[in-house]
Length: 90
Image (cartoon, rainbow, N blue to C red; front, side):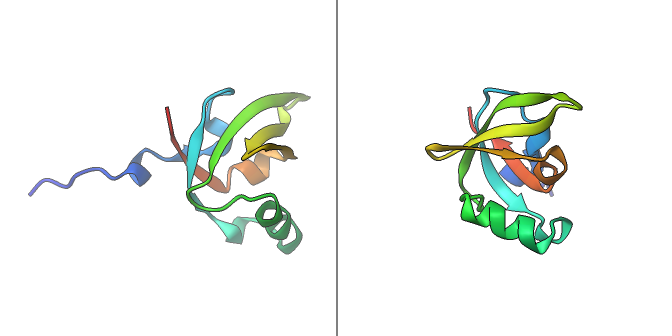
């Protein structure tokens, strides 16, 4: 019996997605985030099935990460981006 890979099998953390490459959010591990940060990310529209695109990384430790979510660009910490799993969309 062969098991077919699902898109989630190709998911990677948002901070691993190349700058300028779009990805679709497949899952968010809310347990890795604090209450305040979870609310902030939800407010900005981070939810499963949303298309995101990392645009820029900061100079020191590559933090923060500027991410396009819909028509907004938001800055999030790289540690928080690791809780967001994405599947490359292109």
